[in-house]
Image 1 (cartoon, helix red, strand yellow):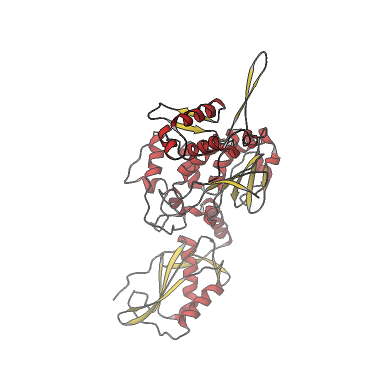
Image 2: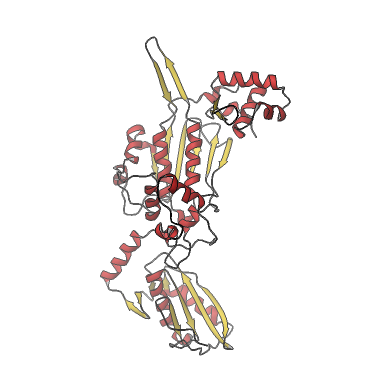
Length: 436
């Protein structure tokens, strides 16, 4: 049996007597491609030589890799029987290049391991900064579909060619496998994105928690924006000469903060952004802090150092971000620099409310029946009068009276026709709703 030729991603060693050279080759492959396979018990020409194996051989290989490749990688080491001979197969992948072996840095070229000069090492480090991690990490789930993402492109008037779509927008890494970004943008995934509404100004009592994740990031992001928009009450002030409307908070600022959180969070750490709604403010939290080469002063001036470059390109194609860098200055112009709490591990943006939301004074003015109907319409905006009657103990005539009162108070509003329309519930009045 012959395993073929050595390549930039495959290295053969006749035995573990060449362990040091094998580890150097593994580090060189990691630096070039982010992964590589090393065999012990195979000749340079691919012929099976066999490897003598004792009870500690695999452990010795593992400990040598752990001790002499920095930063540390966790390889997969297996014993295979080929041509009735033992062969040790070592596979490793990593995204923390440059990797050193025995204190030196190497790069794979064909089947050779070439030591890097200081200038080449600097170039490799620059390349690492320019290449985003989520486009290189292999996604755990490789059975993905992208119907929702393609629909988003089509709705923006962009052409979608099924044969080239995944490659053109960078959903696969150099290994030809779906990357982590593909997992984020797939129709289904394991990423949880939540908005949580609290009763007061702290986290002691939760009113509602909504789950918008486990689906395409674009779709989840839009759903959060729609939900927060529904909380943005309008206050009307009428004088003798004019009517003045004011909103609870600046929705444009929230949108910029939320999209930035989704774009710049460290998705490779699997810590999604979150939105917390309090009685006096909204907080948008993204994990990872600022990029290492971006100062707070540059950040406040709107200078961008995207952590996820290819994801930013997709956001740009779909119209979510621009290259003008106006998002952060917009928030500062409205709420000041104090809206930002920045640490090494997170960025927290606070959008304060312009006044106390009406919902925190409404619970005493709505009776139980009105709260029940409002809650049902929140959860089921398609419900008819008949549906409401079936889900409560109230008659249809009483339901109509409740609907009339809720509409008069601007707590609910009908969108569309009687047959095909739906109810909109103004959720800023959270405490008016029944608790589930």
